[in-house]
Image (cartoon, rainbow, N blue to C red; front, side, top):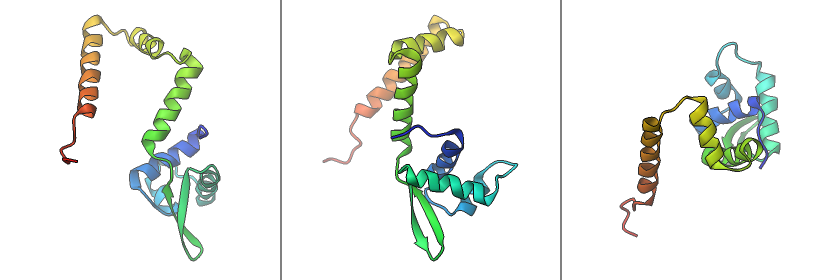
Length: 130
């Protein structure tokens, strides 16, 4: 997997949100000033070549959809980010974040409780009785 450019990531964010769409649908979701149709079409084709999107063909029109799940890309991006800036250390990342945002011990404790709760929820069965 390759890291996306800012423009590619913006389009992927939209496709993850709408699940599938034509270039015009993607443009509708973009903020003003909206880019030209050809610009978005070119970026979507680049995403296709990179293996991030695929399409259903309807004559000359293509309805695009993501091939890479948002969570998979987030994980890939975060690992690369941590590796590049924090030597792969989650501890260094959290320490930087805490210092940069002037978090006190109480706020860090609350953050840790949230993380523990999230991890516990992931470990709980989803009730499908397999």
